[in-house]
Length: 193
Image 1: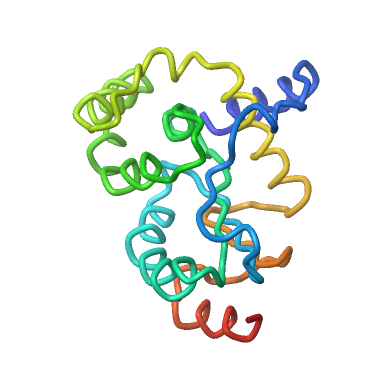
Image 2: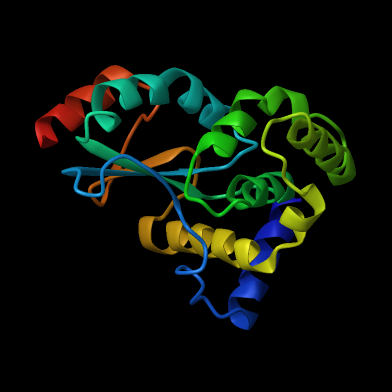
């Protein structure tokens, strides 16, 4: 399934124009003027990414993001079709806010079960319908502008940062190893401030 997904992305590269960045807002938290710019490439079906959102992100937010020292941009690097569809949901409101993204990670175990993409989509749709977000699931999944935006993120990650696994953190343009260790991440950020 991964090979088919990657081949699809390569084919879309040749047939899609990638000037849609301005139309879709990236999901960013923190001050635009923050000295430390953190970018995290992630896949919504990745358990390590969910762990990052549950175990690292809250401390990062409290210690650095909320006081304007760090900004964080959540970038798309879907590893499969289910993650690709979930990314479309995360961007559907196109408001640049991360609440839907965090909701999907917090409820990941509820929707990433099933043996087919149809099962996964059904579970994802249920999680969305039971949320407070009032999204039109089918409309979100069919939005080609969001789809192109997500594909562009993934291609950028592979091409410019050599992303091979998720989550991958880029801090001020440099890859940071071991994103699951908050103590090391905190020390690294403190040196940059």
